[in-house]
Picture 1 (cartoon, helix red, strand yellow):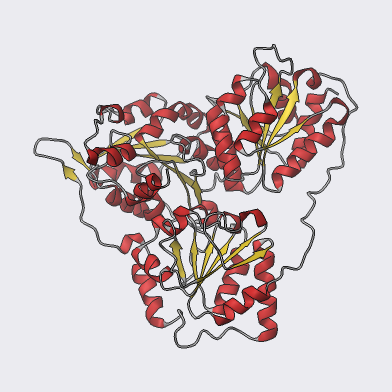
Picture 2 (picture 1 turned 135 degrees about the horizontal axis):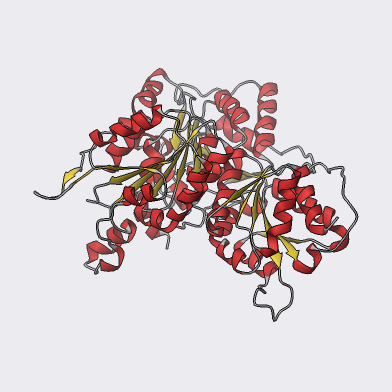
Length: 550
């Protein structure tokens, strides 16, 4: 058995069921070995798209994603998607063939490349191929993006056949979290707020029980949107996407507990959201995360679920926390959350319609998003690209749970959303996947519509089309800078989508969304692309936050 075959077999036995990529000579054998073992290969149009597919698949499925690329340019073509995955700590293994001769045209310094974007690097050795491949998979399963170097001369080396067994992913050594300071803070608080981040995505149940025991409100960072969906004391996303009610309530907190969240500038509105008088506690498995974005008063080291369970156990021995008459959980506040806890309930002045007499109509992106929220089935996965538009789908489209929201913002790259949505659709074919993209990001990634058509994916692509890189228009335009470099002529993106084999629809008013209902009633085997000509009268406040962070 050749090393490439061993690697493919080992990865499949560890749990790899899908592999995304573009096949060349360097990854031909290892990819075919995965397929022979039983994995499904999803052929992307470009390695950049394949990387985002593996990322979106892993985030949505909760399992390790596999990316297979050619040596040299195959790796570098995938680099932006790989960087997004690494910065998001997505469990992905990148099968990266290595040309090890420094004079080879394909040579790149793979260990340095991986380190530069925050990924781990492993390399397969001829005499330890099964061990090395398994170790790479297990490292990814623990929450890392791993570049697995496959030297070309090693891949074809004949080695002993591998037949198992598969080592289990080693659990984190059991330790009892020291929760007494947290417990004291919870017992002293009258208006506690929990903000759960990416590191708490698997901890809904213990966190909701702890919140109920101490009377806390539940909020999330954007990366964990949907975590507490359906809970009566859930106030949705903190930070730039927070509703006025959520911002008001967080601003009145006397205790904020960050669970698996580093409380970055997005989550705290550059620190302005959390009141200076509030006690701030940060819970994270990685002590290096403590205080990286703002000072905190208390820290607790441990996995979020373990810390929450330990706190619950201690509460059980001391009795429930008494929130007192000043606590959050009153019938009056419950009613306010029901009435005003969603952006759908916040009034606004619609800015759609012709910009001036004789010009084509445009639709307000808030009106568009609200109408889509009504039309699309609630059992959905929403994947959001980066850009001026990104808050509208993030705030106006509800999701059923934390797996229903994929936010490609760790690297803030435009153009990753469409391919990430394809990975999500592969992971959850039982749900309708909604890719929300801007026109700039769509044009960058439209080639992956070929892949969407081949997959017959249940996919709706909504293009918030303002004929510009809207972030730059609204940031630089008010100061009188020329904008010709960031604005585009009117383009029929729906026609482009139809050329790829999708159903395409142009939307300028709510009435134009009628065909969406017809598409939803059909087999949904042809992706639907909605080219929504959105009004561009003003910039978004979340982009003001973004540029403040530059």
